[in-house]
Length: 553
Image (cartoon, rainbow, N blue to C red; front, side, top):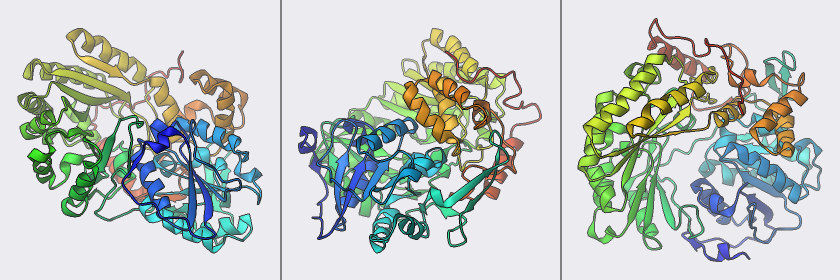
């Protein structure tokens, strides 16, 4: 066994596999140091290890445990879009056909889960026999039990049985019809009446949330112990997958979840990370700060995920400084009050300045901000407002180091902005902000526009992308490879512009139409209308300007 496994300090008690346990390989399609840092992967692995019905072996791209010669189940946790290429490579390594349609009774059932597949599994649907939609707390044991019920049946019988379990999606049992091969989807229907018309994402609603089940020096964040403080976000910014896909907003119980988790973690490490989309909006966050400020935790290093701007207090800043953090991160998206109303960001520029003042007063040396360009309804003056905001922050809190990380708006499934395309002028706008901010001593860090294009392609993709993704992998998985693959497959799927830049019709069938997220389509449309109503008469359509080539060199 690799030394990386022997260095693990487990915070759970594995249960020995029972007689006739199902041999299962649980894979993460990246290196060990990346996979073991994923809280989702850790929790799923420990859940499987606590189930005596399965005998689990782990597989990463660089290391593996002893694998069964005839696995019955092969699972993947997919949390980053481009890791799909590693899924295909691992299937090849295990002599499992890439295409689900080519697998026989001799091959394991290939299942997958994680944020990427829950959001929109369709670009990858042809590679998976089964996709688990939603939270592992509610799905994993149900899936294993359902498989056991039909373990000796034929592959087709197994898939048909699993497809009737809430949250278990079997892509091969749904037929997709297109207006034409280069056009929109006409309809998505189950192959027969015994299969559910829609598969609904499963949501864990308990108040005991996740915490690390293993701590190791080989993690990307060395020896960190992670605690999930909240799940989802109450703000519901119109573009935000992390909010809309994971609704409702849930908070971990301080007494039943957070304090016991912290006490377990600090027994094995002094590095603690609080995770969640909006952790400072936990109703008892002040209590949590008081707990961590006890003298017995003086040597604990504390890291926080992004926090809501108007919850940055001097007390929070002092707590971070006392626990070896020098910065705090806030998501502001834009300097424009109007545009923040469009996206439902309940925040005024004055509150951002106040957060900077408090951060400095509490002893922090750095404030990191997340911004975005290409937001639907964005106008040139909104970019000016972002520059003005950053200069105002510099003036309000002199000496505080300001960093603005800036991405391009990418439409995400199950959000009100899923019908909008990527603004073709976004790359120019990133360069404009860079030109104006860097000479002012502000650290501007733009995210790759080209990566945003690929992200949008996969985010809005349908099953016609599977041959393209498989081909791209052979071309080297570079940005130019996507251009080449689209050219090769012309006539077999829509052009890149359709997936990436086009504003879709509100009544067209979406690739994920048969997959039900937390909110129905009608509600998302109402939220979209509310956003556009905030734009004002002068707002421009985001793709009105001349489109640029989707992938530049």
